[in-house]
Structure formats: structure tokens, C-alpha cells
Image 1 (cartoon, protein in one colour):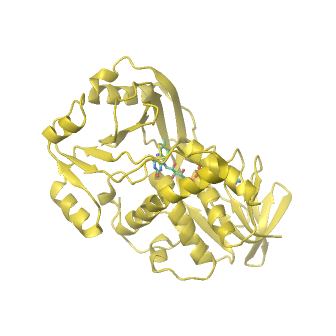
Image 2 (cartoon, helix red, strand yellow; image 1 turned 180 degrees about the horizontal axis):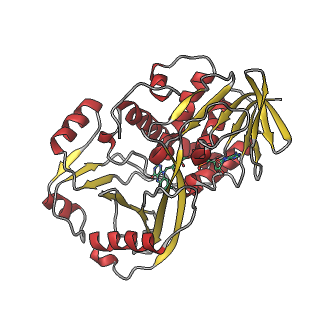
Length: 364
Ligand SMILES: Cc1cc2nc3c(=O)[nH]c(=O)nc-3n(C[C@H](O)[C@H](O)[C@H](O)COP(=O)(O)OP(=O)(O)OC[C@H]3O[C@@H](n4cnc5c(N)ncnc54)[C@H](O)[C@@H]3O)c2cc1C
């Protein structure tokens, strides 16, 4: 019997394994496909919520704490595995902000470095942009290449003796009364002192033996990868819920759609055109640039966009770390720390906001 079985090998499951392993627990991660091959692989990798001032403070704090952990985490993973996740502090410029006044107040209250910029400042900072409005500049925001991050974590966890099981689906839980004692893999059982459900967009699906699951549903997101010259853009740019992310090699990610289409994990020509048009309208010089790749992923969405990082309300030894919606990459390290504290008996004050039954907060 292992100390903890984690259901789902996306970034949230893998960072949970990382933290619990560092606390001395023996961990098994069970993934139905390939590790990190779902939403975590598909993500753009912006290490901040988009429009953070629209989220409840607890979400912003968890994201900020996650973002602060990334430089050291990337360095540790790169030096242990030789795989660099390419943490890249290129800053985030948010265009078309209607709420300038509340934004300045929010930045002061939360201690966030944020500068409101005029259209002249934007045009000077970003040559070639076609924009005529007010913007917010957050120079501290970084990005990370999530496929590399997952590869590095995978290799690191293997080195540390974490059991990583791919191509196995958890279909039910093993129970002894109201105590969870393991998982069922279509007949094959894996026993564990504790079980963590970190199955992303699938976390709201019924699992045999679990009386309540959080109300999570898939929200599809599509991204295109554009070929561009090395100095095309030097910072992340967000406008009307779409964004451009520069890669270190000069290419650009253009994201993303937000589609409530169930578990349809397919890319569409309409989304490709919508994203390509967005990039070309903002940067006329991108007209004619080739699309290198186009992909999609299913975000774990919920009505309030606040993750579930908590114990099950009725079953002992069952926990959730799921429902991070658009912020699972930035939140992952801090969400894993928070869950580890909850599992190991601390009672962190911030946990209430992420419980199974949560207080009413400002909705996103
Ligand atoms: C297009 C797009 C762009 C995004 N951009 C950003 C961004 O810039 N910044 C940011 O912070 N977030 C971003 N996100 C959101 C982020 O990707 C997610 O919040 C995060 O990846 C969720 O991680 P996860 O591990 O919970 O889910 P996943 O990565 O989906 O992993 C869950 C895993 O559980 C497995 N699983 C499910 N059920 C079972 C089962 N029964 N048995 C075994 N395994 C199971 C699945 O196969 C899957 O691999 C983006 C998402 C998308 C789609």
C-alpha cells in the first residue's frame, strides 16, 4: 500500500506528487492517457490570471504565490533533469482596459506592480502594434513552456521514486465503510492511505464509490502557433480575452478560444481563422505569417472559476485538487502546497475559499 494515490497526471497531479514526495510520502500517480497530455500540455503558460482584478482576492493570492515559486522550481527541475522549462519574465501588457480607476486601487491594495499606459506609451514600447486606447503593464508577469515543464517534472519525479502509471483509467474507489482505501482500475486495485482526485476537466464525471463530485465541466480552448521573426514581439499582449505570447525563438502563440462544447477535443477551422485574424489585426506585419501548429485542450471549468482544494465532505482520506479553469498552470505549485497542508493536518486559513462548500465571493 502506498501513502497516496493521485488520480490524473496533469500539471496539478504532478505538482501535488512533487510536494507530497518532498514531505516524505510514497506516491503513485495514475493517468488514463500520457502524463500531462491534456489541458496542461495545451496551455499558453501565462503565469498570471488574465484580468486578475476581476477575480476574488483568494484566487489572486494563490496565483501570485504559484507565480513566485516558478523561478526556483524551473531552476531546480532544469538542473536535476537537464530539461529547461523556459521560465521567461517578458511582462504582460493588457490592452483596452475599461476600469482604469478601480485598477489602480486594486493594484495598491494587493501590492501588485502595475502601470497604466497611454496609447503613445504603448506605441513607443511595442513598435508595429495597431492600437488606440489605454493599457495596463505588469512587467513582473512571466510565461513558461508547459510541455517542457511537464517533461522535466516527469523525469524529476521518476528520479525521486514516484510511481507514474500511464494508460490506466481509474473507474472507481476502493472503500472500507466511509474510508477510502484505494482506487479501482477497471478491476485492478491500487491501495493507498489517501486518494487525491486531480483529474482536471473529468473531475465532475461520476466515479463509482464517490457520493459527491465537484460541479466541474470542460471548457475547450484552442491555440495557434505562428511563425515570426525573432524580434516580432517582446512581451505578452492581452486584448479582449485573446492574447499573444512570444517564445524565446521568436515564434508566437495566439490564444485562445473559450468554448462550452462538452468533451469534444477537436480543433476547428473557425477558431484558427478567429485567432489568426486577431493577431493580424493587432500586428499588421503578421499578415502572411505561417501557422506552425494548432491545438486544443479542455479546461476544468466551474460556475465560479474557483478551484476545489479540499477534503471530500463525507469520505475520509479522499481529497480534491481540481477545477483551476484558466489558471491551473500559474496556481499549480501553490495549490499543491495548500492541499499538502490540508492533508497533513494543518488548518490553513486560506483553505475555506477552496472548500467543497464555499462561502459566496465575488464571481468572475
Ligand atoms: C488553450 C488553453 C490555454 C491555457 N492557458 C493557460 C495559461 O496561460 N495559464 C494558466 O495558468 N492556465 C492556462 N490554462 C488552464 C490550464 O491548462 C489548466 O487549468 C490546467 O492545465 C489544469 O491542470 P490539470 O492537471 O487539473 O488538468 P489536465 O492537464 O487536463 O490533467 C488532468 C488529467 O487527468 C486525467 N484523468 C482524467 N480522468 C481520469 C481517470 N478516471 N483516471 C486516470 N486519469 C484521469 C486526464 O487524462 C488528464 O491528463 C489553459 C488551458 C487551455 C486549454
